[in-house]
Structure formats: structure tokens, C-alpha cells
Image (tube, rainbow, N blue to C red; front, side, top):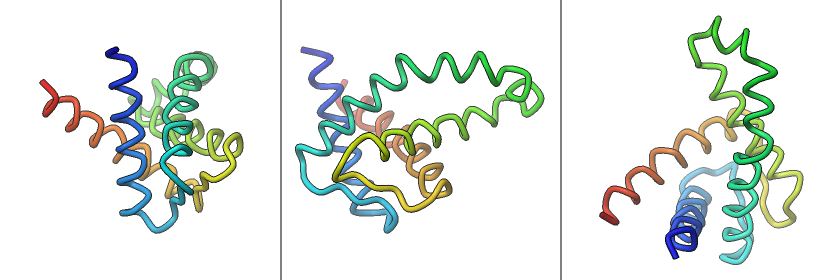
Length: 111
């Protein structure tokens, strides 16, 4: 049950960010749920591999490069999902940062 609530909160955050950011487009609410699921799966499977492969540059940048990895994960989700589009890597970077903050805010208000 917690997983479903978490995915729905992520989908809600995706919809809100698509309304706020001009470079993010989500066709409908079903697509937002699919985006939330795909982002969760990519963060579970692909992100750890990217973090390990880019560990030296992540250490040199004191972890700031992890923001770029998050943006790349969002761009990968853009390529995988029809009905979800991101304008550029800068929009993807802003989307990933705002998604983190919005998810944290929603998680805190849920308690």
C-alpha cells in the first residue's frame, strides 16, 4: 500500500511540474503514473550503475555530478515514454531537482 501511495505522490508531482515548467509535457494522468513507475525503476536499476561508473568525477565534484545523473535518468524516461517530453537537459535538471523537493514536501505532509 505504501508503494502505491508513493507512486501516486510521484505522479502528482510530475503533473504539477508539467504545469509549472514550460519545457515539460505530460499528456494525461495515466502517463504521469507511468512516468512515476518508469522513473522509480530507472532509479532502482540504472542509477546505481551510473553512479559506480562515474564515481571519480562524482568525487571530484563533491557529489554535484549526481544532479547530472538524475537529469540523464529523466531524459532516458523521456525517450522511453510516449506522451512525456522534456525540452532540454537543463529542463531535465530543473525537473529532477524540483521533483525531489516536491516529493520531500509531499512526504512530510503525509505524515
